[in-house]
Amino acid sequence: MKKHSPVWILAVLVWTLAEAQVPSGDWILQKVDENIGSDNKISHSRMVIHGRRASRTVESRSWIQGDEKSFTEYLAPPREAGTKMLKLEDQLWTYSPSTDRTIRISGHLLRQSVMGSDLSYEDLMEDRKLRDLYAARVSGEEEYDGRVCWVLELTSKEEEVAYHSRKIWVDKERFVALKEDRFAKSGKLLKRTEVKDVQRMEGRWIPRKIVFKDMLKTGEGTEFVLEEVQFNAAIPDHVFSKASLRK
Amino acid sequence: MIIPKLALRNLLGAGLRTWLNVVVLSFAFVVIIWTQGLYEGMNAQAERASVDAALGGGQYWQEKYDPLDVFSLEDAHAIVPDSLGAMIAANRATAILVVQGTLYPKGRIHPVMIKGIDPDQQLLSLPSHFLKTGEDRFPALIGSRMAKSTGLKVGDTVTMRWRDAHGTFDARDVEIVQVMKTIVPSIDQGQVWIPLDRLRILAGMEEEAGLVVVAQGALERPEAPGWVFRDLDFLLSDIKQLVRMKSAGAAILYFVLILLAMLAIFDTQVLSIFRRKKEMGTLMAFGFTRGRVIRLFTLEGALHGVLAAVVAALYGIPFLTWFARRGWALPEAMDSYGFAIGEKLFPVYSAGLVVATTLLVLVITTIVSFLPTRKIAKLKPTDALRGRMS
Image 1 (cartoon, rainbow over the protein chains, first blue to last red):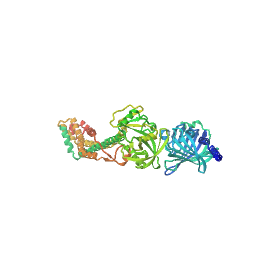
Image 2 (image 1 turned 90 degrees about the horizontal axis):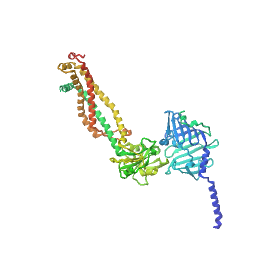
Image 3 (image 1 turned 45 degrees about the vertical axis):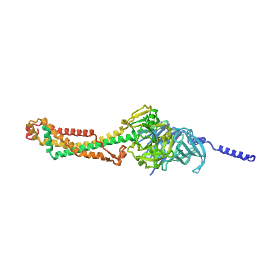
Image 4 (image 1 turned 60 degrees about the vertical axis):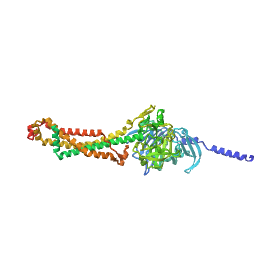
């Protein structure tokens, strides 16, 4: 046994060093937030909704302040142009120019799809940071779309979360979540998000093209393409008011 | 007594003209009674079916429960109070829990109300006993309309998603164990029935319910804080209102029919008064006052109504009796009206309906018969004998 002791010590040392190399799940989530987070953002995006027969594209411009305030104006197609959406903390309103009415989206309406996409209003409302809601565990490393990723398994810390658990593939180098699976309490896969294009914008790695897919539904999902983003932009306070919905 | 005799003789003496008027009027009689009978039958059938399958003898609703308000539904559940728990234990009530969810038949989104019911309940005719399966299966019961709109059949497995009491998503594959044929849309369209205990556990709503259905004939109405008792008058008000609305819509048809008959009678009266001036003069010469002449002509007109009632009875009673026995096979489109009537509608003719219709037609006929006779009041007997109208 004595002559094997150095081998054992070496093995333990290698294992300890290897473990030390694996950062904690919380640390990875924090890095993800740091990469993408900013106080103010103005973005121009395109949402390609793939239906059963045809696809349609919805263009919008958004003004975002922190996690709790956002204002979106839809620009195209003509049928949706002028529709506006305001989110203030946990409340959401939409304004439709065709009816000239502002409606508060609440209750079951939050579960409705946004303009026929695979995203629900509720998905848009999600503003709390993942590390506040979930306990993260690094379950390993995997290659995704040619990039080496940390695989994080997230389990809810609180009862009041929409998805009981999530699995995230985070690019080890760029700290961008390239793929995310969201699960029901039963473990059934409900939604999948895949980043198809990452670009460097204003010194950050930004997911430019994301595909959202409701896994229980047939179809090709909804593509979200970020055309342009401006970080830490000056946004006047009046943008985030109900009055601006009718302007 | 002379006036009725004269009136009847004159009326029958007019021959074909009288019988044409009488036939048109009798047709109005039969159609009104037949149509109103259909609506009464519809009401009775819908009420009976709804009570048997869904409403029982009334329901206790959790104070936030309102089946028509989807906004409040997710909060409309609470622990069943002891007073109602005792009724449930004694089989005089049964609890139902309602949770909003989504069904994914063949990858399509289909919003549903997931309803948990005790598989052993026998208060409602809903066939909940099909939900008695082993723990290894997740049974679900749907109605035929729901099966049609989702394309599901017995033995199919479909994914169902919902949120628990904390708002967390859950989803399971459920097995359709039975497609029930029911005429009550409120337990069918957009509804998925699963065992109450399973739903309570999965939704994190242990011992809770959204409503408690009381057995028919159970008279006790215990106090249940936080719960409101809804009696059958309240629960059936929608059906009654719908029948009233449809019944009022049919009034247009009656109006047209009666208008046609009354036009014919009015014309006949005007023509009689124009052509029978010499007869009026003769009657006056014999000592008839103008009032008596008016009564005679009015009665002649009004007797159209009486004759029409007799004729209507001759062919209407056999027809309506045959129809009440055979029923009316409804077109399939009727099923989508959201009304609890079966494949056949059986009319109900109440005595009140027959008496009211008869009185209505007689009164209108009398009024219409009287209006042209007012001219007689200005008639001078000498002019009348010469055939002139002053």
